[in-house]
Length: 189
Image (tube, rainbow, N blue to C red):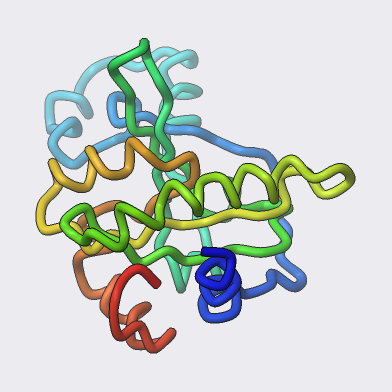
């Protein structure tokens, strides 16, 4: 299995050179502005200065750079609410990947037997890499889902301690473009 991990690293890891970003903003689905939540009635309400400040904070920052071009504007993490429930949190790509020296892309799916067998080994490797003295939290993995639907995606992602591309991106054009760019012929990769 060590050979598989090293092969994984050789094939899909890339170093971040010159990437710098500040802090980390976390936006939950409840906090994120949507087109449905903005209406004409919202524009006619009197607004206090506190409301204006809240609106400024809720607006998505303008993101650009190679990571956003490659992975999209947001990546997901899971936060455990209790022992059996988790919440998906949307993070700004530049901010969640700030300070990472190496980023791996993990193409995988819940329906793939070899993927389900490999993922626990990759979790151990990920935790070992991020707990090394002097190099803590410099390594990240982004899950690029090949799951067939959102429910499968969420269930499978719950076994992973790293980031994930949103399912609509991973299963859409962006995920396909990444697979082509990195010559992914099968999974797990």
